[in-house]
Length: 496
Image (cartoon, rainbow, N blue to C red; front, top):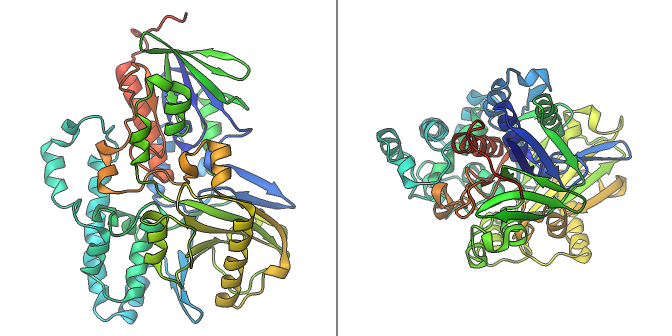
């Protein structure tokens, strides 16, 4: 059965490989010149940059993925656990290095707030339950019907998942110190939500962070893309790069072919891992799953302004991941979600992978990128980028005491206009939909078309949501639905 997958990000690679493994004839059409989508890489002046994801959490999801096809992570790349997991700056002379050891983390919490070590145990026990129940009973569901959630196991679990309490309230039941609260809330802000309207269910991310650890694939996150791409090819998936899909042809509520600028590809089934809004509004038109008004009312996770930087020096006191929370977190969140605007006093994140991995920078040099979350849909221009570059570099230098500006030998920015140009990202979003209660599970855009019998979606705008591990799962869910609904021996669409 001829199957077209649009895009080659993590979810598309996952869907394509699962389908090829099940015997489908799979072709991936990719707009850009290489696989990976937002996780592409580029190299300049001896530096190698991951363009998008840089946090490696939930390592068991990756291992499970490769295990399905008879392989292990170690067959493709070397994984190392970071220690410290990350550093958080609260002010110039106030920072915390979050240790990989849970015992050391308990001691750290207790030193900051008396009694918080035992509170951390209680919090993590709940977070572990949510993580395990979520992975076992919720995350792998296609979200096509409420009936999926009406089993006794799911209903009993849902009572403990804190779906109707915010993570903002939940964290404050356990901790009062502002620094500890920020530590527990940060995954929500940087991964697509506002603490005050994100369900406490997502404390499961704290379990992923603290207990399962922060890891790094040597060579960079692009090594995961390489691994998945090579595995897909091993399974027989064909890739066509530089082939942007321009239209989808429909006959009697079936997709019959997909056209790029150079060729028409007949198909029996199709999976779009491209931006869902773009697929709906620009490729399907009247056969779109949703009207424009539907998208206009969705709460988007942040976009971001990124600066890729190369230094001709080594830093004296840096770690792989650094978060700068020296300004008001909630004010920044308000300017992302409630009153969209360029932030007046932004929080930001710095990744310095060359601290861990000498292969991503020339000897004696440092590879960095700065990331500032911003509201999707803002006006983006070079003047604004230049303004915020100066703000972030000045703050970095002031807080760390490290001079970097005069040592920058390579610099490139990436922001809303680039997300739109490279990925057709709706409003230039970087992370998909915000993880609000009304955008969870069945309330997300459907992975199956309501109007076309053989059209499916995968990726960060459908189930289960944003992030690299969810993307792998999203592709698997889409493939499972296709295998269930379009059996190779019985299903066929005549190509006209």
